[in-house]
Image: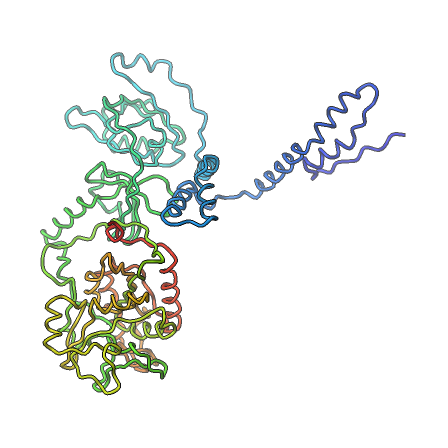
Length: 589
C-alpha cells in the first residue's frame, strides 16, 4: 500500500518544499541511480543554506526597505581616514582592515548605486547614419543615464567661433561618472536635435527635459584634461549662500546652497571664480558650484566701495552680559553659600563703564571679508594641553554664574584664569588666588605690552585677564574656562589655545509681554522685565551673532541655569574625547 503524498500549503517556503521532496525520494529498481543522484543533490547542505537565504531575501523585499543613506562608500572612507589619524587599538586596526578591503568597498559601492537608484536602462540602438553626417571631424556619440537628476555639466558659447562648449563638469554628476564628457568638448546635438543655432538657455532646457537616457553628439576637445583626483580641502562657510539669488552664477540649478558654519569639501578649484564643493554629511554625491574665496572677496569689496555693504571693521557696538552693579559688591567667589578660591566676578563691565574696555578686533585697517576658513579635523591627544573654552554671552545670559556652577562641580578638572587688578587686597584675600594684585604703573605697562586679552576700569580700579593666567591653568592640565567680551576672540584664536567658543544666550519670548520672577538684564534675581528689557536682550543676541557668529563653535540656548549647566558639562566632556573641525593653521607645523 502506497503512502499518501503530503500536501504542500500555499505558504510553504522553498526550504520546506526541498526538504519534503527529499523525504519522498524512494529509489526503485528502474530509476535507482537517478533517485540517488537527486537525493544527494537535494540533501546538500549548501543548497539548503541558499534556499534559506532566498526566503529571507524575499521576506525582506516584501517589507519594501529603504536605504538609511546614499553615501556609505564615502562614509567608510572618512571613518578609515579618521582611524589612521592617531594611535589605534586592536579593534580599531581590525575595523580599518575591513573598511579598506576590496570586497567590502565593492559591497558599499553596490549599496550606494542601489540606494541612488542608478540603474542603467536599456539604451536605444545607435542611428545608422550618424557616421556620415560629419566627414572630416572626429565625432563622439555619448549616451548617459541621469535618472531625473541634472546632467552635471554647464555650457557656454565660444565668442570667437560661436560653438557651444562644455564649460564645466560637476564632480559626482552623471557626466562626471560616465567619464565620457570633458571640459572643452563641442556639443553638436542633444537627442538628435541640433544645438548649433540655439541659445544656451534653450540648450539647458533641452538637457533638463531629457529623462532616463540622453544622447549627446560631441566633437572632443583637442587636448582632453586628465580626470582630477578628488581634493580633501575642507572649508567652513562664514556666510550664507543662496544660488537662486545669485545673478552671477553660471548655472543657478548647479549651485550649492549652504549656511554659515557648514563644512564644505572643495573637490576642485580649477576655475578661479567658481569652485565645486559638497557639504560634509550630505547624501548627495554630486558637487555644486560655490563662489571662490577670491571672487567672493572681490564682490564684497565692490559692494563696500559702492556703499551697499558696511565696513566690517566698524560694527555697531553690541550690548553684552555683565556682572552685578551693586555699589558695595565685588561678587566674590561664593557659590551656594560656599567660598571657592578663584571663583569671583569675572571682569564684566556694566553698561555705564563699558567705555573703558579694551578688546582685540577694534583696530583700524583693511576690512576682513567673511568668506571661507580652511579647516581640518582635530582631536585632543593625551599629552596635549586641554583646549581653552571661551564663553561669550548676550544680555541676560548670566554666563559667569554658569561658569561657576560647572567649575564648582569639578574644580580638579576645570578652572578660571586669575585676573589682575589694581584695587587694594582685602584681609582674607591671597595673592594669586582671588587676584594678582599689581600697581597701576605695572598694570599700565602690561596693558601697553599687550599682555591682557581684555582689560578696563571698574569703580576707579583696573581689571584685566592676562594670557599668562590662561597658560598657568593649562600647565596644570586643567581646562581653562574664560568668559570675555566678543572683541577678545580674535586675540584668543591661536594654535596655542585652540579655543572652543560657546555663545550663550537666554531664550527670550517672542511676544512682547511683562514677566514676573524673571532675571533682569542687570543681573537681579527677582526683577520685573519690561518690554524694553526683552527687546534689548533680543537685539543684543542678534548683534553679537551678526558680528561674531562666524567665530562661534556652539550656540547654547539657556532655558534655566540647571539645564544650561548640564548642557555645558556635556560639551566639555565631548571636547576631551571627540574630534572637531578647527582652522587648519592650528594643526599644521
